[in-house]
Image 1: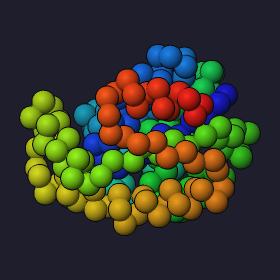
Image 2: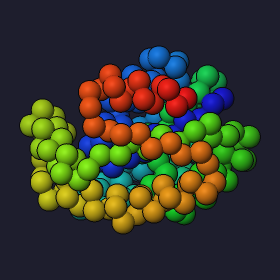
Image 3: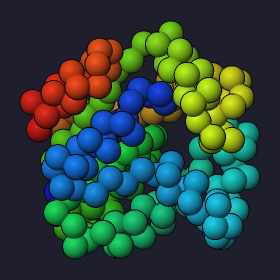
Length: 187
């Protein structure tokens, strides 16, 4: 099984690009955010824990996320490949996910990092809030907090990943098709 990690700030278009790549590559798209929302909607034990953190704009703790990621990988071991969307988000998560991949005898083929300036992220956040039924998208303060968490926790994790994996930075400005083309050219 091949592993592709797609990272980038909130509102960078990760989910859109992952959905396109899922179709064209034949990989399964694993969005930790979507899975967490599913767990919350089904009121699972994990969902209840996640809800308590995310309602305040915080990330779910690493040990809890690792258990969920391990479960998701086990559910999809029969797939050609996995596109992991939005995980890992912190330096410790990089280490734990790489350890998990080693235990499961999996390797990461590439990390794609979609870069978008903060000003554009805020424009996209407001647009998504207008178009989305997602309750967690309606508060502008939450948008800012998500971007702040990305800058303070995930951006350093991406730099750390560069020491361990091949990380390719992609310009996230432009049309969806242009960004997809850039990503496909790197993989």
